[in-house]
Image (cartoon, rainbow, N blue to C red; front, side):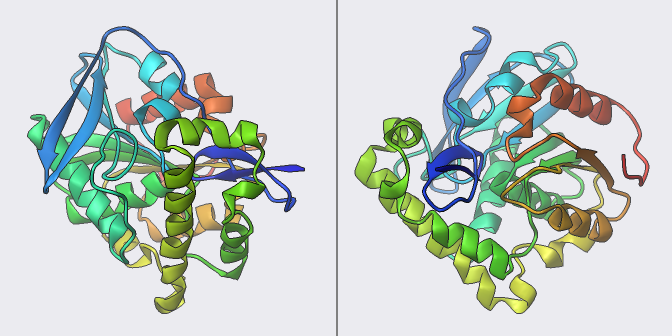
Length: 291
């Protein structure tokens, strides 16, 4: 049995491949929650802190506020930042509607994210995107350069290749995961809906194979003008390091920070280090470099 990390979650799988699951983690009590009607959907969000620098956290595949960002909601500096996290449409508490995956679902999520922040009264904000959330953040920044201050992405890829598709297909059948690793997602969605939504995600991401060069958001990368920090775990078993170098190559002025011991869920495993990187980056000027 191996651990498989995917879209921000850690699952056991009989295939020998890895990806990530994060159970909900308690965080500070000074968290406000609510819903905003955005683009025809009631989006659930949580907000904490009172800093002048607004930051939006974007979860991974099937991810939500409570499952993906416990250490960030708890520990990012509340005096320097106002931190918002939301459940994308069809995920977590942003249901109904049921989640679907048309070819433009990343662009749809990007529009929802930006429109949510505008509805909450933020004229400018930074975006922190994990895995799927990273692709969403990059698209949002490319389309809204005047609104997006800075970007941090990790565990993200701008295109898919045969190797990626093989990994996704290997974990299509959630019945092959251990009961322990299914439990967090089944608590959110129920067993049947979780299995159905996960399989739909696999089908949805596979559609990008039919796009030129397997592009998810490659065409948007040259349009990103916001300062961008790409963090990548060199031991990420899901997203090979060449994906991070691709982002670094195509996003002008971006910075790439490699974590030798980091895996796909590096912001959870190394939360203190990750949070400091984010805080320092958001508060300072950046240069084009690899660390």
